[in-house]
Structures are given as C-alpha cells and as structure tokens.
Length: 195
Image: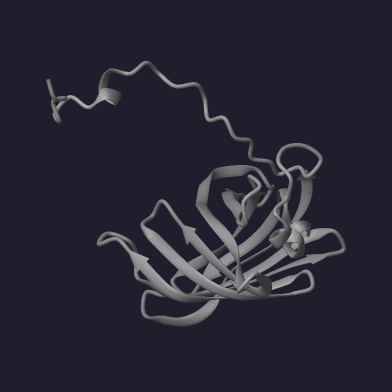
C-alpha cells in the first residue's frame, strides 16, 4: 500500500529536541569562528549605549540601543539591534527601532576579500541589501537595493559607517526616505557589555 501524500510521515511525528547548534557572541565559548570572519572579530559581542536620531520629517530624539553580533561557526555574522527612546532625564519612554540581519564576507574563489554583503530587515516592512567594504576596524555600507512592503514608509536608500574606536562601537546611519535625499538619521556610541 502506498503512502497517502496528504498524510506525510512527519505530520504525526513526535516533537523534536531544541535547536542543537550553538550561536555565540562570546568567542571564549561556543563554536569556533569561521576563518573568513577574522577581520570582523572586533565586532562580535553585545554592545549597549546611547545615540541621537533625527530626519527632516521628524523631531530629533535621544535613544538607547543594544546590538548583539554573534556567529554559529559558519561564514556570516548575525546582527540584532533593539533601541528605545529616552527622555531628557535618560529614562526609557517607549520601544523604538528593531532590526535583524546578516553580514557576510565576499569571497574571490577561496580567498576572503575586504568586501561585505549585509541584509538588514525591520519589523516595519523595510529590507535593505547593503554592499560594503572593511578597512581595518571600519566598515562602510551603502544600499544596493531596498525592498519594502506595501504599507511600509518610503525608504529608497541608505548608508552606514561602523567603526571600533578605543574599544567602543560607533556608527552613523544616513537614509533617503519620504521624498528626501540621503540625510543623517542615526548615530551612536556603544560599549561592549558581553563577549
């Protein structure tokens, strides 16, 4: 008797164990770092700090942010960012931007280059594909493509500059959106709190 294609064998299979592979933001534990990521090693960790944001269509604002950059032994980094708005006394007001993504080194045959690709996605319906280059502990990204859902705000381009300066993670982000050309949007200084 042949199996019923409407009843695949996995349909009634028992539950599986939790995900069996480690991901780590701490190079002292977890999987070995893929050799292609050696140039990005200073970025791996948990970072927390403050920043300032604005855009021609909104009032300037202060925010706090946590960025987690981790790996699972394969040739890419996982990037996760959570931010929250701060009042004048540095008290949390409300959640702000969230973002997840992946940073991947570009290979030329078997050799890793200083070029990077990054995919960054927000829950507000915007996905940016960045192409970048690493110079020492500095990374400069520019959008190659922006994809957005029908209900997302109009974002058409972006640029980001990351750097490790005196042990801190600094970045500046520009955005083209809502009919405005590339303009400063976010900048922050974060210190390593994990990893």
